[in-house]
Amino acid sequence: MRFGIWSNGLRERSIAADIYDLDLEEIVAADRLGYDEAWVSEHIGGPSNAVPNAELLIAKASGLTSRIKMGVAVRLLPLYNPLDVATGAAMLDHLLRGRYLFGFGSGIPFFKNMEQRGLTNDMRHAMVNESIELIVKCWTATEPFAWNGEHWHGTSIRTLPRPYQQPYPPISVATSQTSMLEMAGARGWTSMYGQFEGPESIGKKVRVYLDAARAAGRPEDRGMITVARHIHVADDVQTAREELRAGVEPAIEFWKKFNPERFLSYMPAGGRVEDITYDSTFESGLFIAGDAETVYQKLKDHYERIGGFGTLLVVMGKDWSTPGWIVRSLERFMSEVAPRLAQLGAAVAVTP
Image (tube, rainbow, N blue to C red; front, side, top):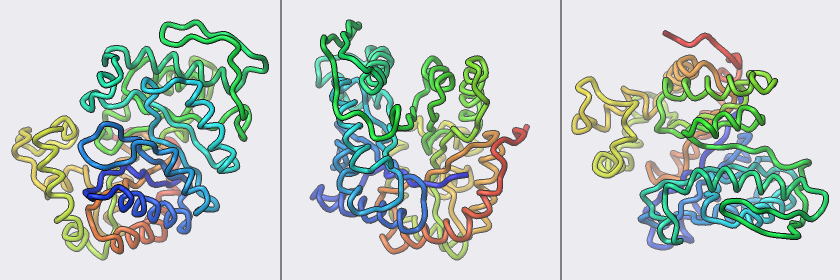
């Protein structure tokens, strides 16, 4: 198993520069501690200061890090011309000298990004499908070419530079759409799952992905599955919960009001959103916090219920604890938890 962080930024700061500095500090710490990957969310149209252009943050981080691979989780393809996406990604691949990862998806509908651009949400998935085809064509075509698609058109297309990694950087997709999961499996792209999706739901989608890989003649490789979780390591369970309480409680109340779907896999026994509490989110597994043994056992349980996966991302970019406690948790995770998780096999029997 590999390990990374997901800088899923959402901090309450009046000055965006302060947010970006904190995000960069966490990426630099992850690089120093030996994490393999750092993914940066692209949040456009959100209610607060975030990272609307994750590639700019990665460009700065490229000069502050030496070994960690970095990518955007995810590029919101319907919002851009694919030629510009292909060109920017190729340049970042050079700036990072092959440490770049390309992640893509369709974005969150309620941010109204499509409407702001004179588009409609029902266009998103078709635009993603066409865009990724054109982007890959830009990276691999040896001669200028024409494109006459449903959403994009062009002649004499030739994008430079070519990617540093050949034929192009590793591709990851975050999606719930069956056709895109099948495309990812058939083409050997990584399939990514966010922190709010429960193990059983992930397991079902992974099965679609693996079936498509097998049908395309590829191995059923669970190493190509990436899963993000909320994780915090401290001396004991009570200490870990108290270190997060002041920061997480407001977020939970906000989600209950505006994003109740995030709790679908983590409902308390009564099955009602109004019964969700700070502590119930730990009991249900939405937050995984405690001493190293507790965190390991809970993550092992997630791993087994999913059926196995290759990369685990620790969710970062939040004001849920002090910077010191957050970095200490990153350190303890890598020294006390990660070595045991790394021994888990790539595929296991799914727990009934």
